[in-house]
Image (cartoon, rainbow, N blue to C red; front, side):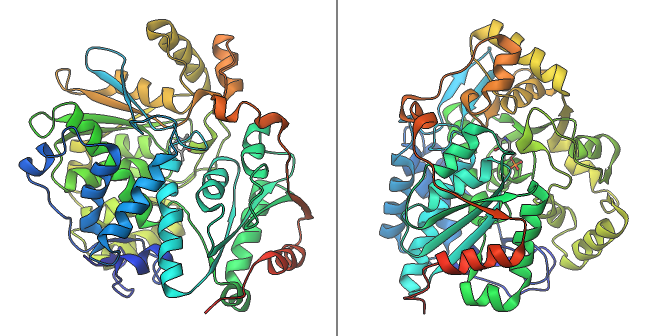
Amino acid sequence: MRYISTRGDAPILEFDEVLLAGLAADGGLYVPETWPHFDADQFRALRGLSYAETAIRIMTPFLGGRIEDTAFEGLVHDAYAGFDHAAVAPLRQLDANLWLMELFHGPTLAFKDIALQLLGRLFDHVLTRRGERVTIVGATSGDTGSAAIEACRDRDSIDVFILHPHGRVSEVQRRQMTTVTAANIHNIAVEGSFDDCQDLVKAMFADRGFRDELRLSAVNSINWARIMAQIVYYVQAAVALGAPDRPVGFAVPTGNFGNVYAGYAARQMGLPVAELVIGSNRNDILTRFIETGIMEMSDVELSLSPSMDIQVSSNFERLLFDICGREGRAVMDTMIEFRRTGTLTVPQGGMKPIRALFGGYRMDDDQTLSTIVSEYRAHGALLDPHTVIGVGAARAKARYPATPIVALATAHPAKFPDAVERATGIRPALPPRLADLLTRDEQYAVLPNDLEAVKAHVRAGATMEGAA
Ligand SMILES: *Cc1c(COP(=O)(O)O)cnc(C)c1O
């Protein structure tokens, strides 16, 4: 198994190289050269396996022999041992054919933990074997930063610097980052906005000397290994509900298209996925695209579901690659045109296969709040403002009444307590493990919005001795 760029003009890489590379050199995203295929008996053989065992079977073909079997098995078991629920991603029935898959039982209470808990361990394993180190830098408005910090804490070959806008993230989100006191974790509160933080990170990557000196790296949502790890729960849920002998649909609260693309990947591997319903908030670029066939950029507006407040869904390029018949040149032209004009259309005939599999549904903030209430009344479950959009999308748009549909619960309600309380009057409690979060000691540096100051801080804190 090797990996090719969606824009067709970057070196072909092996799994461990793709893991560390992130974006391809031609600006594209890496995808498998061919999709591994599971037949019906291979899916049936997953029945009754634990989450970790399923994960090992599903992911092994993607490694192309670049991580030894026993090492990989150890990493997978270790990654999921720390989840609060023994099933890792348990299903909860909401209605005759509607299920909720809870993806929020990891350390930071959001679905990103499922991929990042494995990714941190894979990074460390590959780097240690090579005798290398990296410095991960990232900007966060909340969710991704804490998931990356939890994934990389105490890993010997990684230093992590996460920039957040000082005083502009919620207290729970800040504390999920700043109370991690591992020696390799460095939180920086920048006196500026989230955009300022992002600009600082971009500027550090753009400074070649600095980038090479510190071996800068990222764990952002375009990393192939994150997609790979997310395929697992689609398979696990579908098999539990009768696949491969019965198709199953999914409804997915969507931002960068990484999560729902993993559902598409599962289908490419042979899983009978009946449909994928995309849920969006008022930042509805994807839903509009499915309705009109035109993808049109607009400004980001803040909503109650901040992790879905996006302008462009970067992982869509991976789907576009298949729609373009895996012709990198066509993807390159389409993406350059998109950047230039702010508008994207797929090649002739491309919308038909997209609409055959994907649906789209949007919910504004008022609907989000009222649906949190109606779902709570219907079955007693408190849903967070992201998850409820997936459930609403499943209820409104499911095309096959006789087919089970699984709505993905991407965050724990206690991660977004204000919206849940505003809707229902009930403030969801943090799990016992995090009950003392609000009284733990915090550690972070407050720095001015100044590139040189941030670079000096990173240089001083990174452990580069032992670097190859
Ligand atoms: C990141 C995130 C999403 C969006 O997932 P994508 O893979 O970017 O589409 C949805 N909900 C929550 C809670 C998230 O943290």
